[in-house]
Length: 197
Image 1 (cartoon, one colour):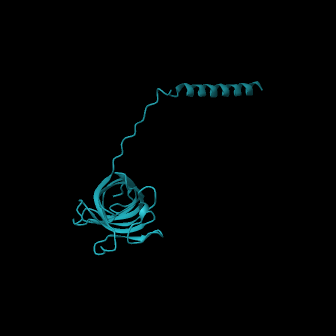
Image 2 (tube, helix red, strand yellow):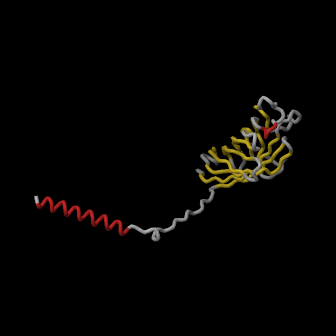
Image 3 (cartoon, one colour):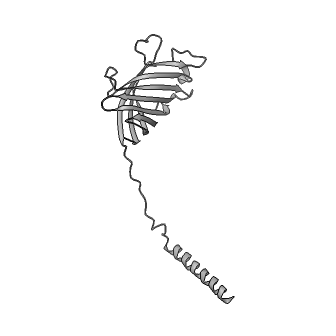
């Protein structure tokens, strides 16, 4: 009996000293090193413009977008009042490397936007940019909210194909020009942080 008690007492002392040692050797808050994360740089960047000319009933020869859904108080030729709330627009806009509508397109932005609020002029975008040049071949997919009155807006890059296979990142949108409710030009700065090629 005494040997088993002595054995248990010895185990208790060993665990006690090990625990006491681990507490005394753990770093105090002052000894912790401050970890600073390194800035992550994008693996690829792109800078381009896309030009949207909405169909207004008189410009079918050069329109690149059209209203396909409208609230009951509006029509599908003219954007609705109240911040264009309820309008759904599909587009197939040319992409250029400069802000000139007549420059040679390097691709096409294809998708839709819908105006989703009455009180604030804002839209939700979902589109794909298709590139087919000697520099880039493939698509980049985008989705996100577009608060149009902000100078810059960020939307997510949610994938891609070809040179942009499974791309991840974000795009900063800036309204570069607009002419009433018929034409606008967006500057798009894309930063990809996940590149597979």
